Length: 195
Image (cartoon, rainbow, N blue to C red; front, side, top):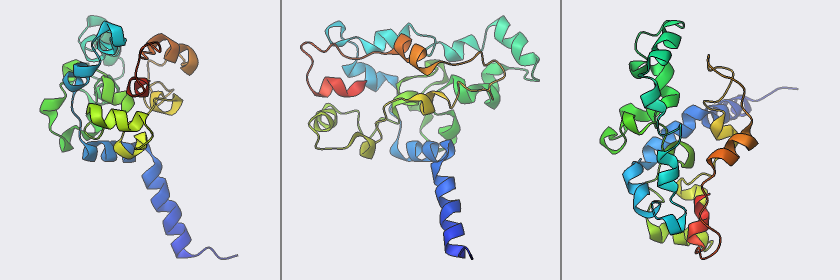
């Protein structure tokens, strides 16, 4: 049975489009807005204070940890002089590192660490309240504007065996620790789209 060149090309093109590098390119094209934009709607206690929860998390401190003596010693063990300047480390310790050359980096600083858009996708297409309401009302598909719901695949881009410091990863247990939904009681439909 002969496989046509078109079929081979289509499979190759699909493979290229399905990897994490494709997600990064798409995210970069959509545009990142930075944690300050997310904070505008996600800082109030009565709505769950997702910003505060993130700010207190290890994700928010991911870049900062690279500057510790412990991180520097560990990095030296894998041939890295300065973990805060190494692509090997930064690809998982900061938001949008893989597309950093293609985006306006003033929107996202290294010091933000792993922020909202690392897990939820580049926010330019969905950060406005009107868009979030349309998603909640079913008028807009969340994926069409770049809003992703984090799943094991998203987390596994960094929490995997390729990471020399990987200690195992249980998605369900880890997700439960970082979950930051809006309170169900009194929340609008738009509020429930952030999980």
